[in-house]
Length: 207
Image (cartoon, rainbow, N blue to C red; front, side, top):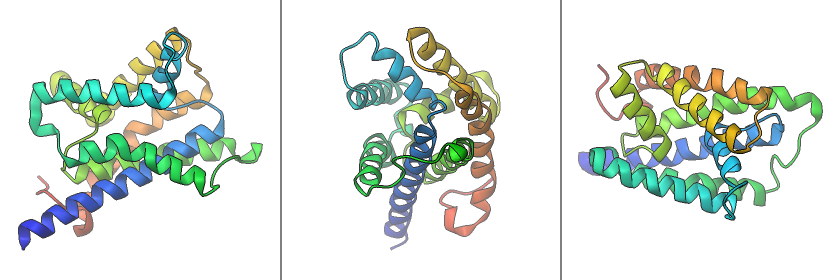
């Protein structure tokens, strides 16, 4: 029974975190001020590869997850699949429901600020599920291990690298991009450090 409850909690946290992250991404995109790191890279790649945005995103996730599988397969789990495909599904559901299609200009900056924080919280929640992290977050964890830095620093370095490559490839980088770069790391680290203090988010033992 305990094992089953543990799996249900992992699955639920991964789903909830993925949905929250999707809401954050939608708020970032609808602001029109810039995008998150992966979206910036994908938009840049689209200038050179005749694939759709969703197709390139799926290819990115698949390639990275294969690499992670051979680097440390313990990082791959049901959460990897849920997040890899769930974000896109959740974004489609939000759009189909007619939510967050457009916002007034006066709300552009509040939207990207809130979206970045929500994106970080959602990402942290499904990482806390300990059910396998998604492709990008796996890269972040590996970078943290290799450089021996904090989660916040690893996220900023990784985001900065993707923003730069995306921009050089032709992706759009604006003031909102900087906001995402600066706030995403701290939001994620806050979630990973403080949410496990609540029993609801405690799947593994907190050191």
